[in-house]
Structure formats: C-alpha cells, structure tokens
Length: 221
Image (cartoon, rainbow, N blue to C red; front, side, top):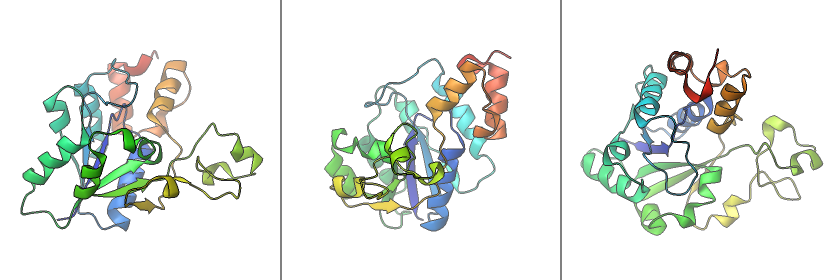
C-alpha cells in the first residue's frame, strides 16, 4: 500500500488542502493520504482559540466521503510540540509490512522553504519521498510586474517568470508537484469569517456547518 502523509494545523481545513491531497493521490497513485493534524506546530505562529478536538472534527467531516483519505491523530494524542520525524517513525512502525516503498510526505511550498529548520531534516528525507505542492503568493508585487495571471502565479518566480525557485534552493531529493493551484489559505478563511466577508465556498459544506454551529473564528451571524 502506498501511503502519503499530509500534516498541518488544518485550522480550518479548506478546499485547497483537499484539492492538493486528491491531486497527489490520483496523479502519483497513492492508496491512502493520512491527514495528520498538529497539536502545536514548532515553526509557525499558531492560533490556539480553536481546540484540537474541533480541528479534528472539521477534518473528519471534510474527508468522510473519500475512502482514500484518513485522519491520523497521533500528534494530537501525543500532545506538545509536533515533530515530523517522530510521526514518520511512528507510522513506519504502525504500517510495518504493509507499506509499498517509502512514505510520501506532502509539503506546501511555504513549508518546504522552512524545511532546513526542522528537527532531523536529513533523516526525514532518508525515510520519506518528499512531494512539494505549489502555492500561490497573494502578496508578491512581482506578479503584477510580470503581468502574470493571478490563477497561474506562484510565489518565488524569478525575473524570467519561472514559477518557482525552490526547486533550486531545496537541496534534498524531492518531487516538485505540478498540482492545480487553489489560492486559499486557512488564515484567509479565518480573516474572512471574522471580518464578515463571504467564505462559505472556501471550505467543504460540512466544515461550513460546523463553524457556523459552533461560532468559531469570530463568526457572528
């Protein structure tokens, strides 16, 4: 069985997360994508106003209709700061005798840029096949200067308009995945909810209902 890990805070999970996971599973022929929600991410500021229980519930609701998607709760159950190397070793043991090849490890472009700061990055690469998913940058003014269509622009383009320089700067073996880009982030979803802007179709219907019912992220209506 080919398995890929997709870690993150998923605060909340949105259509961009799901699109990338589906693209990886379908294009790279993974039998299972394990969504691994972090308890406390070590290298990013984290909004802790929504409990791990709520994040897990939203994730479960979002993937309920896809047999290839599954939640792996080990980091939430472990508590404390989450380190990918510990999760990788845990999953290798859990699926011992069932894995085909290495575990896949899905990284967003902005996460990949911080990979060198991770705990034991060389060991992670030794144990996993790294898959880097492209992410659009909404703030880089070079998109305008290069006259790039917003839907096709990816942060990190060079002066020639090449879509990504991380393929040169990321020194470890990896697959630079040509995924369809859905320009949504969890922080944007949270900001739109708190600001009273439209956000309903940026998350799966079940996640929308959960956020509304529980009045998360400053929802007021």
